[in-house]
Structures are given as C-alpha cells and as structure tokens.
Image (spheres, rainbow, N blue to C red):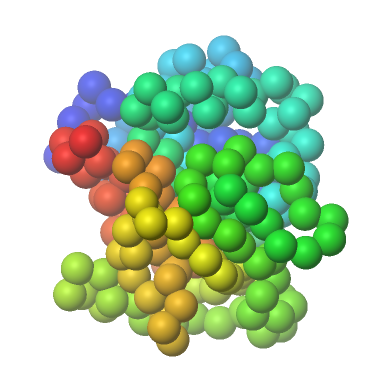
Amino acid sequence: MYNQSMTVGVLSFQGDFAEHMDVLASMEVQAMEVRSLGDLKKVDALIIPGGESTVMAKFLEEEKMSREIAARVKQGMPILGTCAGAILLARKVMGKNSPKTLGLIDITVERNAYGTQHESFEALIKLKGKNIPVSFIRAPKITSTGKNVEVLARFRGVPVLVRQGNVIAATFHTEVQNATALHKLLHQLRHIL
Ligand code: GLN
C-alpha cells in the first residue's frame, strides 16, 4: 500500500520500539530496528519511540549517533519523536536531570508534566478533523513553540503534536492502540517536503 522504497528505522535501544515496528508492519511499510551508525545509514526516515529519554540519550552518545542523526535531518530525513522521543528532539528541556537533546525542533518541553505513571491517561485528539485515540504516559508538556513550528493538534489548549519541516514531535503515544495516524504523517512528509 505504501511506497516500498522507503525504509523507516525505529531507534531500538529502549522503550516501545517493538510496538512501532508492529504498526509499521501492519501498514506494510518496510522497517528496521536501529541501534548503530551502520543501521542509521540504511534508513530513509527515523522514529524515536517513547521510553526514558535520559536512557536513550546515553545510548545515542555511546553509539556516537547524535551528530549523524542531526546531519541526516538537516539533509531532509523525516523524523518522528513520540513522548521521550519528542523530548529528545526538543531544543530545550525544563527541569533538573534533563537529558542532552538533539535540538532539532524549536520547542521547549517540561518532562513528566502531567504527573506520574498513575496519572497516565487516554484521550481523543482531533487531527485533520478526525478524532484519534491516544495515550499520555508520563508525558511531557510543550511549553513554548518557535515561530517556525506548526501546531497540528492540541489537547486542553496545549500543543501535543507539532511539526517543523521534516521533524514531527508528539507528546502522546498511538502505537499502544496500534493506530497509524502518526506513522502516516511521517510517511506523507516525503511527498510534501
Ligand atoms: N517521562 C519519560 C521521559 O522523560 C517519557 C515517558 C514516555 O516516553 N512515555 O523520558
């Protein structure tokens, strides 16, 4: 159904990478788990999943991948970060013990801004006129967006899905519901950029 020449990589050090791989498989999109610079070279787009941003940041540093990801994104590689992934894409993270981020989208985020694991919740988000079910799991809040950042969806007035060029950040998860909306957006970037 989708353009088979595109291989989507899922950063697979930690977090819910397997769920993203499942969604991509259900869409019949070619996908591979990415754990090294060598893997990164083989993909045309990248997803940074939810999980623990501090842990993923350490792996990225150990594998010396941060600079290469930034360079690829500057060359136009589409990238999607969800939850911890959105934190890693942000220009700035508020709060102590914040991870070193890739700084690829002009947003400021506050980690764990909706509370602890117990306060995680499901909600409906309106995207392109359609309601999609999503989960906020120890989610960050986007507290400011730069002028080049487009807000694609809000929840209770707060931006939860944003885009700057080929970079998409979502503070929620959809892969838990096996929903494809975010993955479709990433795929569409190839055609609109
Ligand atoms: N609270 C996590 C962090 O700061 C993100 C949670 C998630 O990805 N579900 O990294």
